[in-house]
Image (cartoon, rainbow, N blue to C red; front, side, top):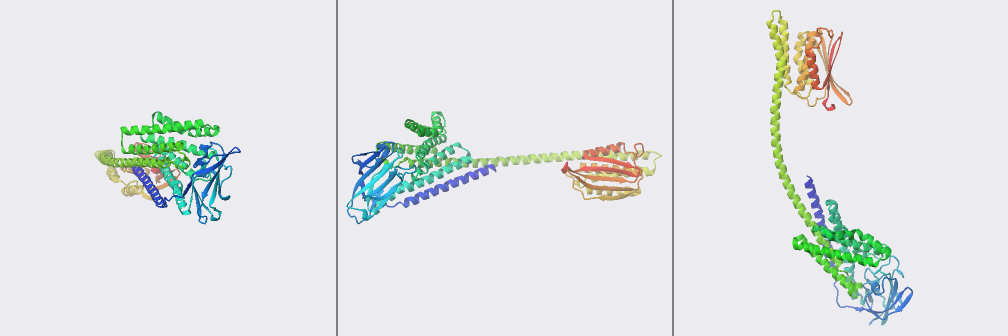
Length: 625
């Protein structure tokens, strides 16, 4: 049953994963279908401007520059302001004009012929100001336009915060908005889809880790969620945390997500060992302290060193993946190698563009999208492993069911043999008991009667009494062979039926006072016989020695927590018993009754006086023992 429950849980998880993947694919298809068609009749692109740069209160005019302008790359990691002035020829000032800026920031002001068109943030930028995360579209009122319109863009930049200005596109609202819509889809909508897919994959990884307790799933889930966070940061304007803390958080997410994904890849291919694994572990453990050290001490050298270690780790992981593929090229490792290869190609392309291309300010990193494909490949590997585990579990369940069925047949046969053996043993013991009872009881009485008959002085009445006792003994022995299953009233009724003629013949009346009694648990033929023999001995003594003319039998259920008893009491109104009298039961009869009471787990006591004798037998109920 445990295996069956585990299989059901795995099936449910796989079903959820497949449904989430289908939903993501549907969202992607809808989004692609909603991309507006782009007319490639390009509006005017402004890629040159006069610039005045202000740093530390000093302003310097530069030669006209080519856009895009990257503040950190051109000026350095310092705070400052840049004022860009561009001329826009307008052929028809009565028609609306649209302006599209793919990237601008950190904070900015846009002026048209000394009219303020748009503003974002303050100057200098506040700790939360960061406009350089999404494209900007503006519509210029026609009454602001002149045949030679002056466009002025003033940016305020924070050092190290990716401030700058991209090329600017102007033209009719219809044409410009198409370009804006295309770029907005790529930078906003597509990123949203990547975030949704990444978060789903990460949550599935966490779910698999919680259910399976496989640490590789935790590495994968954390890497996927951190990368989704890195993708989401471009959509957060203003920033949720003040600068530079927000920058440190972003940097920490990056330097932690990369070794986490490398660690997962090494575990997937069973190569989590050697110096590559140790380097990966070091980068995971030291990621947060390294970022904190860079933030506190401003150590650019440490930052470059750490990024170099990350590059070495990624290349070493890729080398391990490819070398493992050459030795064992199963489908799982082929998919992993393909994902790693695509990731490396995109990463190399992005690094090359960032360091060599002048248009780096508006470039979209390919590795951002390759990572999602990388994650989907890993998710496929996990799903395939779970499928194989489910199949193996089903086969194991089937094998276990066959083994249990065979074992059940063996146990049934063994139980049947044991039952037959117990029946044979029980029959043998019962025959031995019956032979012993007949010998000690009926045989003893018959031998006594025979001896009396051989004596000349023996009277007929004595011989008759001895034979009657033998007959009673035989009847009780036969009665005891019937299992009353612990029904004490039925057993007492049988004694009453058997002995009433003897009591009447002796002139003794019998008073009967038996209450409803509980059934004795685990009560068998042996116990019934012992109780009957005790009662027979008591009544025999009363008839033979008491001189009574009345006897009372009472049976009550006496409860005194935590013990309950069935008390059987037989009292006569005879002359009583004295130790030296002829009716003392201190001989073999008394010893026999005590031995039988002990075998029953009962306590027997005798009270005797001039007004008669009482024998009390206390049977402890089995459920209270």
